[in-house]
Amino acid sequence: MEEFSQSPDRSHWATHYRLKGFEQSGESVQKELIHYLESAWSRKFDRVLPQGTPEERLAQWQSELERPKEDADTGLVRNDLIERMVDRSNKLHDPRYAGHQVAVPFPELAWLQAATSLLNNGMAIDEMGPASSPMEEAVMRSIAHFMGLGPDANGVLCHGGTLANLTALLAARQRRYPGNAWRDGTSKPCALLVSDQAHYCVARAAQVMGWGEAGVLKVATNDQHQMDSEALVQVFQEAKNRGVEVLAIVGSACTTSSGSFDDLEMMADFSEQHGLWFHVDGAHGAAQIFSKTHSMVLKGMERADSIAMDFHKMLGVPALCTGLFYRNGQDGYAAFSHEANYLYESQEEEWWNFSKRTFECTKRMLSAAVYGIWENHGPDLWESLVDRLIENAQAFARAVDQRPGWELFNHPNSNIVCFRSTQFDNDALRRQMIDQGPYYLVKTVFGRQTWLRCTFQNPLTQEEDFMGLEAIGQELPQG
Ligand SMILES: Cc1ncc(COP(=O)(O)O)c(C=O)c1O
Image 1 (spheres, rainbow, N blue to C red):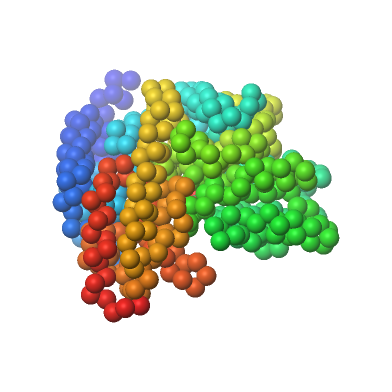
Image 2: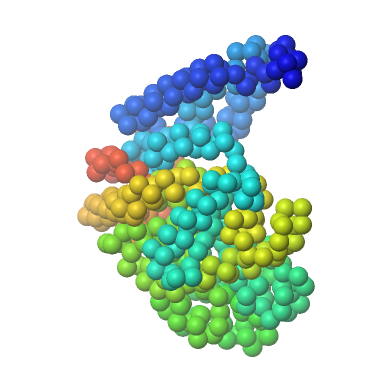
């Protein structure tokens, strides 16, 4: 034993498991991140999205990778790695960020993430996550009840909305297919109903399940991108006539491109009438359930069999962290029925062995941020965050609407705003915005028309932050 503890080993592993090194690297990372936040909050960055083509950026990182190694004793990674990453990353904390739908994380959560990275409890089974498993179970039960899903509701956390949607649809297949689909596969053609504006991951899920393109019954939408109820009846009937087993209907709450909410009440009625599984892809907008003002658009969601909600979109939690909720918590076990004798002592439904309900075997301690916020604030913090983001989007939309030469796609019910210039070429306009900085917006295409798209993710965004937008484009030829 003496020999073991006194080991004179000076190899790299020993160097990198030292308290002093941990303390020093912590201090320097903290300094770097504080500097990043200060710069972002005082709008010091030239542009939110750094310039450079993918190839130029790759060349830079590649050439740095090929430099001579630093003395390995100085630290696990080069001293300037974080500085380079900050410098070359999209600056989400800059109040002028209104790009994609990723959360601008509450900075404090970075330390919580650091703690869970260090603890690294895997969570496949209870023994691997003796703290994080009950934390997850407690907080998911509590949030599921808050969402109005009833006394048997429950849920799990997983790595992203894409995975949550696929998992929910696996449960749907197991519960609605006549036979044991998990064990025997499906011999009859199966399909789900979804609007033609849904996120691509819903179609991908059907195709992963082997249903092919024919397994995705796309229902036309109205001019507000909501599923058309008459088209729904028609598509469903045609599929039945072809002998297709229609197992599920998926509502978008909201659509990714335009922030439109399907009529979930209508879809709940339809699913009840036809014995379908009702899944709500609320990856982006289910978060509005926390807002008294902005939850009306989710009416009917409480009747869903399953709901996917990303905590890493509107709720300020670092990616990836998605809640998959079931009205009947037992349904969570239907998605996967694998026997894993080396892991489980019993084949029973045991909440504490999370890999029975998730794709992941090893899973990060995802519950820490969600539990921490829910324990200390309940729904209040998320309510004020959601309200703030949507109010910003609505204020911006009103301003666009009043300005000559600009057109609004719709008055937003979420934090996504689509708009376009009626004077300039919108693709060129966006390119110019990105090249000249500081703004960073994304674009989308409806029909053949390009629309500019903002997602107001940063609660520190002020009205003035977007006042200059209109001036951009003056140098461009008329579109
Ligand atoms: C409506 C919708 N569903 C699913 C997804 C996919 O979620 P994730 O990126 O967490 O996998 C997104 C992402 O933007 C989305 O907007």
